[in-house]
Length: 389
Image (tube, rainbow, N blue to C red; front, side, top):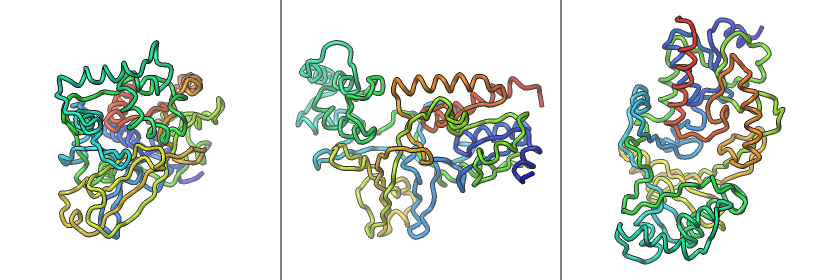
């Protein structure tokens, strides 16, 4: 019997995956008196939200793309603050189109700069309605392109949505379903903050510290570099399993693979204090192969010695085709994948002692606050169904 099998026998619950969902579930179970074994396939916990300090520059980098914590859910904000102190960082995103920089999201700043107008807030809705009318679309939008044009008009769509979307999904937006972009809000003001949530920030001590604190409980045992499927047959089946791996993998892809979009990252250290003047710069044009460039030192201007040093790290983010074994990032929303997911959800419903959750387990892209909320809801629903411990 392997060491993992022995640990599993001595525990009350098994968690697959030490991303945010798995770590919150583990913490809640541990505080409820359950001994928990967490199995993580990577070398460290944190999933795609993990950050790490670059040893040569001291800059904290988000290992899998920029992560900004934002929420209007007071329960989630209170919970997150148990394990981190957040800065007052407010995220702004800029986008380059034909060599000119604009503030995103779509708002009065971008509209006036793009059209060369001087609109007031009261004039924005009518102006956008005129742009939509010029497109001459009739009937219900049949794809993402028609849906976007029906919301913002053709010029804004072609400048800021079309090329970026084409790169992100590796297909013409006409081939994507309309529901992907049902909402495309246009701000009738000069607010350039990317998120509207009440609470925003990044952890003052880094994302890695959150996961360390979540898992710092005597009832939690973390084992990294363990592939669940390599030890699955050794694990007891009478213990509750909280599974945040890929749902199709759990069922051995019996209904086929659920597709994902992947990402590739290209890192570069530059001998300058500031390379682009902002945390994230999007690139809207289809002839630029990457979608955005991250410059992580801008997350922490309060780290003055590092922020003012003549070194910076940038990271170019490239969308990529995904194959089994790659890190999945974005579920592919299409009619065919919805049908396949329903089959796997039906299989999951038959598993009485398994709780599927997280981005992979539910095949759903979650922001971090939604992951915490979902984990809390699922684990407490399970705890409420159990006899008092």
